[in-house]
Length: 467
Image 1 (cartoon, rainbow, N blue to C red):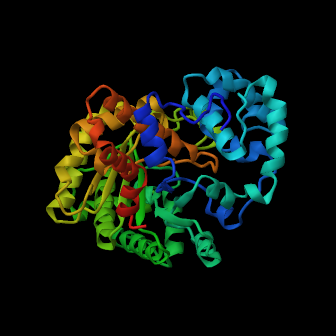
Image 2 (cartoon, rainbow, N blue to C red):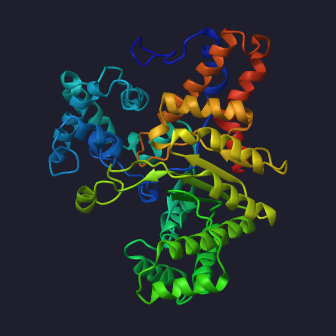
Image 3 (cartoon, rainbow, N blue to C red):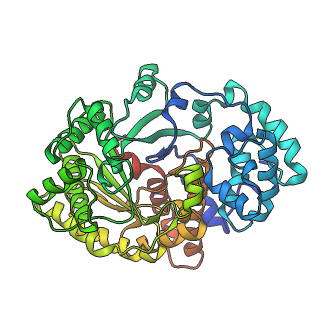
């Protein structure tokens, strides 16, 4: 590898970290068990026209940085040419120093395109032309981009109404990369959202059922879970501000749903009772099917009403929320565990103030039936950077067993985001290598520590998801 900013020992600060990364982690395949990639683009083995299309379009991390620098929306999500958008991104990159975007940008250029020059206004033209020529070839199709990073398994995220036709096409084509789907029924849970009744109508159509009652809703969701299961799904995901757990009666929940279907507004208390009931139903159904359930908790979404109205969701207007998490999460998990209906569970927090809460919470429900049954998920979204990952690793190590951790995922919409796995692995190896150097871990147990690194990088996830 050329001597450059991104080099063999990037982020590795001593010989022990280097040995752990190069001998035990680097060559492990990638299992990306939660992302938002387009299965259609994978099925069709899409070839992009240029670097902007594959790298900048849809990436709200980059968009936020560009807006902060004062770049006009025309060059972000507007009608500027792809090249002009790239040039504005290149101008932004030097200003992202100490933001993970700076590291990710140069890792991605190096790993996918063998480009080791620093990206800035001076190098932008050359890099854009050089890389766009590569991008617009079959060697850089979506499937080949996944192969370049040794991706063994990727799991996309679909709504219950999805036909899964592209997942079916992927399996029919028998490609060498396993592509799964996760079931995300949040639109059915969040009863106060605009357009809720229209969504329930769409769910009824997808399940070929008329949804007039709460029981009908449960039947429809069970129908879609069964459909997803038959199409190879074994994972669900929820992106919620917090876990809902309020006391409710069956008659209350039925009346609340009926009230909503009749077009009436609900009180906050009514909405919370409904959401609690449906979440419990879904979690018990996941247990019945033997699925893994994931909960991404703590995002404060769509803060900028004006820009949300113009551009819609997932365009860069979300932040960290400070919702209370512990009591409702505990009650929810306990309600499931008390009936022995708690399936494998991964809990992610977006507020780093909750790290220790989550690291200790999982220990309450790891009952010895499955290794690492309840997981404290890796740092995600605003926390998938060096400091965020390190804090998550430290909290999990101090209060649980990092040796049982299932490691990193991208949670990304970009086909170029997979070097984040490398980023995580380097941070993990450096953390352990530093402790070996200081005498806090025994260098005589290097092989044991190395095997633990290999497990966190790959083996634990492979076994947890039965891939």
